[in-house]
Length: 464
Image (cartoon, rainbow, N blue to C red; front, top):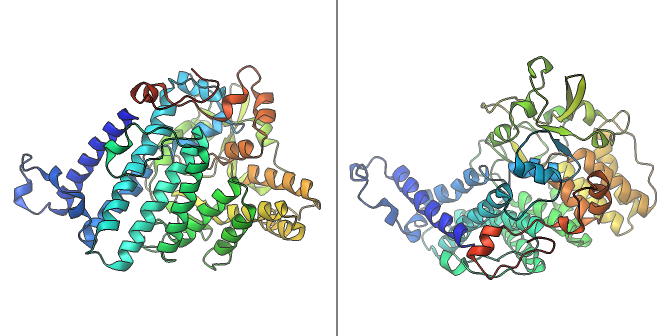
């Protein structure tokens, strides 16, 4: 933990330097590098509407340069039963076997260090905004809601990957350096608390995005809260939050070809960067087989592509294939642009179809059969499929699980989380990877370097 905190302090100092340089770039006294722009205090940053907005807006670029929005999709994808990895990286081969070591640097840097980096930035923002007395009240509320959303988002994925983790809530980083692990239930409680606060603080309108849905609003907080409640088996609240989003009148399901473009009517939250392209590389994105000179690095398992029902237009719209050395490979093709150039595709974080599936599952768990069927059919019909034939609770839950599989694949680790939370991980992954799977693989190891630097951290079972 100490290494992460040192990293946070350095990056925060750099952030203040850059922020000060941006704000005061017209002032000649900031030309000299020895005038200590890094001494700008957190109170000064959150003194004016302009600087406070700049500080919180910067969190969006932070989030798009860390695993929480990019690497998580392919790392969790190859850890689960979505993606096969054809490369040679030792770190990624461990992920492909669903049995990584505590010294795996991809896990440490992506899932731990950068998550706490985001949390550190959010804690600073929450502290600065809470103590500020000079900001326009409505703007202060909005920015505070955004910061709480980001903190919740980071803790959401920390709890998913590691279980209990240090509950870092202080803006004073040294206070966080040697925290022990809090129980997973405490982490989830904090996620829920932050998202409830964010939902109450945020406006329904999208701020500063020229008509695009690139800033967190009330419905984004409600959508992530619905997902959190579902994953924690609070079906009553999961249904209620999903209903708020669905009934808001702001969103509607779009044509499959439009779902991942920046004007989609279905998008609840997207981030206007192109990080996803470099994450997967040309072998992942390129759809023209004539340009393929090697097998794609990440390809869908044949068992996964066989999950689509006949006539499911998601398979033709969101999956493509290429042949190399007489072997046909299937690839995720939700985003169409092959390179990291500016275009009309942004990273989609939350979308309406998931909310229908959340509500369908929550209703099925409460034995509201017709309500669950109706929500499931909304998603099926958009994909060119007829209404579900599932008419009992067990059959409906199975149908919903498969619908989530073929609707949400490749999106922020949802398939892997679904396997864990429904108790199917051992049966599915164990059968797919019998040589490397172990029962304790449902949680990742606490990074070895973090335990060395913070002896209050205790390793997860099954790891050294």
